[in-house]
Length: 179
Image: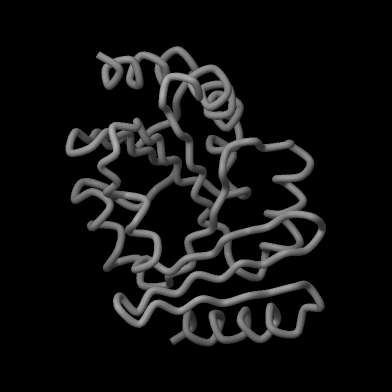
């Protein structure tokens, strides 16, 4: 019940914001994607149904999806490694996606300023779906829900990690998908 009240309160706060906001609702999957623009930063926000499209692409590209939050110290410590990987492997068909699990009421005050201050070049989206007990096992059955967590996949080959990475460790895992 607390989550529902918090979610409704966050929606009211975001709805009252003077920033540009567009919503797209796909009735096919009942997925909700919201794009919030302010402070010159566009942030795509998805519920899990909308987010699923990022988990199952089959286009011979290697996807590195990192789940993190601005309040998670180990997540922040490893972000430069994902940024370096994104820069050094972009020409090798590798794409990094940073999935923020920050609370919706912190998007404007914490998440967007963080993205801007750290000059993140990787694509950053927010996953806003309060039913964590449903979607966490759909990411990976072994995931306890703690962050940082990372998925690396190419087509049907997939690895899940519930840990922090150094650049070397991350690069080693990605190179296995390049073979």
